Image (cartoon, rainbow, N blue to C red; front, side, top):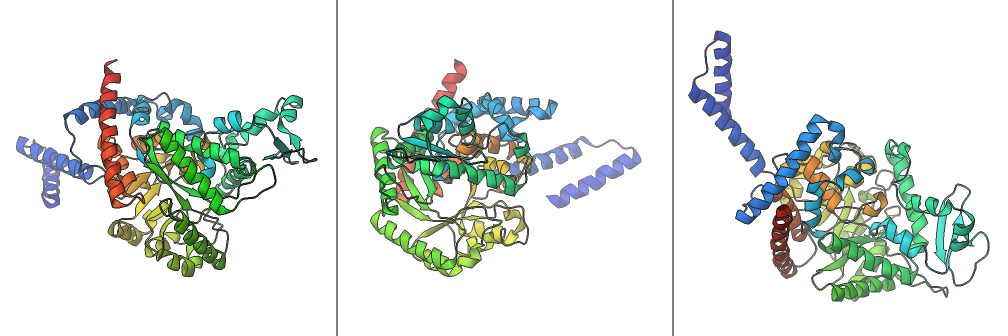
Length: 504
């Protein structure tokens, strides 16, 4: 095909040089070749092999109409192509998008990369949790606020939060600002990666002792499941450091109790919402440690897996990769771990090339990770890309997180565009949505659909993303089969709903 196309281009050049008209047959050949190239590109992309039935085609036409309208508007005024803008500025505009509203209704299957401390919206934490009894606040000289529950007044520097709200009208506003990165701070949009990560860590410091109060922790996780469910997510695999919980009487509980709260809360939620499929936990302590501690983590993981065999999915190490120790420092312990558990490894969340951080990708594939978190630097490692396909390793892509944390400004330049165009095992997921004012997966799916795939991509891409979320989960084969059947029911309901809404 390419030889014919080259010969034709030579022929066209000669015609132009000699001022000869092009024969009609030659024009047809050219445009047929062009159509074939475009069709092959689309067929080779994520979801390109799927065949739509009549009902699906009708809904696809609705989606394409709204998508093309947004694209055309963005061509005329690039500053209003919101999927390419910084999420802090784009969020209210995205929420008005008809494409976004369709994606909100879309049955997304599973969420496979999120962290326990950023699963619940800041509004719920502020308006529900921070107005409870027995909360005390401590504010540092820099203005950083820490919250904790006490049975009795612990004395200075702690003050009852209700009292602080009474004497300082700005306290509530300042507290709420410290719960997300999405604040009135334009400098943060243009900061370097390390500065943004520092702000990121401050939020966790503010929230930790507030959320690890045992009664709150249970309510918090129930709300996390509810917010997933409301975004048409039916299953979640989340990463947890397994923080130690406490109560008003000074009791500090062990990690087994933390997992027990997760398990019991999941069961309670599934009793309340029988069409929810479930949840699993990835034990994910900090990467800022050494090999002997990781070996201890392996023992903890083994113990937890024995006590909660259907709830523990596997292991990861979390925290900013660039300043942290690389995976190769932990190979002795991680190799042992592969014999007892799955690995879901953060790797390549960096702009570096040839540094210890992007080379974490090499260790991730050699350790046969079940999935790789972020994999932002993967295009710099072609051999890793080959192994990802050969070993069928899921790639957990978190577009908005990558933008907010300073890796990419315009998501049309995100490296996952190449992965989507070449049918890599991509899962679009959310990372820490509450920290930038998001919920669930809809925002990330929207920007992936609008900014990270071809304009010619359609509902088949979204359908394949839902399939991938199930296929690359840690569910066993039977559970995946059941989940896919249940998803198909949700899919049929979605098709009816979109057609009905369009008529109305």
